[in-house]
Amino acid sequence: MANIQLYHFSASPPCRSVRMAAKALGVQLELKQLDFANKEHLNPEFLKINPDQIVPTMTDGDFTLWESRAIMRYLVGKYGGEDNSLYPRDLQKRAEVDRLLDYDLGVFYRAMLETLMWPVRNRSTPTKEQQEQVVKAFNRINTLLKDKKFLTGDNVTIADFAMVVGFAAEFLFQGNMSDYPNAMAWYKRMQELPYYQEVNQAFYDIVEKMRNPPAEKS
Image 1 (tube, rainbow, N blue to C red):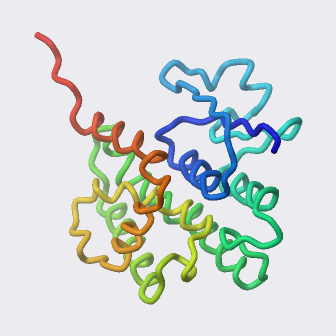
Image 2 (image 1 turned 30 degrees about the vertical axis):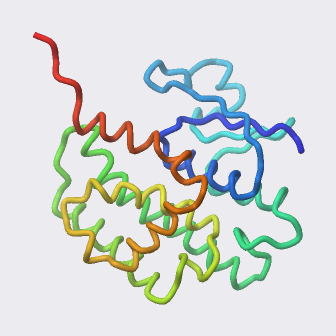
C-alpha cells in the first residue's frame, strides 16, 4: 500500500471525517499536523502542495487532493475493493450518499459551524436566525433517521463520517437534545465505532478549553 500523507489539524471536523474513513478502510495515514496558531499552513512548503492552504490535504505519491469529501471518495475508490458499503457502487445507493454529502457541505455543517462552533471561539451570541437554522438542521437529521441505524440504512457510509463531525458540536447547543431522539441514537452508535474516540477526542478537548479558558494570573 502506498504511503498516504494527510496534512491535518487534529480538532478540525473535515480532517476527522477523513481519518475515520481511513480507519474504517484499514488505510494507514502518515499524519502531518499543521499548527494553525503558528500559521504553519501559510508556510511556502505547504503552499507548494496546496495553493488554497487548507486542511485536510492528502498526498498519495505524486497525486495531491484536498476537500474532505473528495478525499473520502478517493480512499474508498482506491482501497475499498470491488464494492464497499462506505460508498457503494450501486447507483441509487451511491446517489443517496452523495445527496447527504452535498446537504452537509451546503447546509448542515455550515449551520453547526456558524451557530455552535464559531460563537464559542469568538465569544459571541448566535442570532435568532442562526438558532432557527440549527434547530431545522437537527430536525432534518432526526426525521431522516426515523427508521434507520445510519443515515442511508443499516451500514455506515462516508456520509455518516462527514456529518457526525459537525453533529458532535451538539453539546454546545442551548436547546434540549432529547427533542431529537433518533439523531441522538445515531450519534451514540457512531461513538461506539472502535476508532471514534481516538480520532475525535482532540475536538472535545479544544472546545472545552475555549469554553473554560484558564484564569489569568494576577
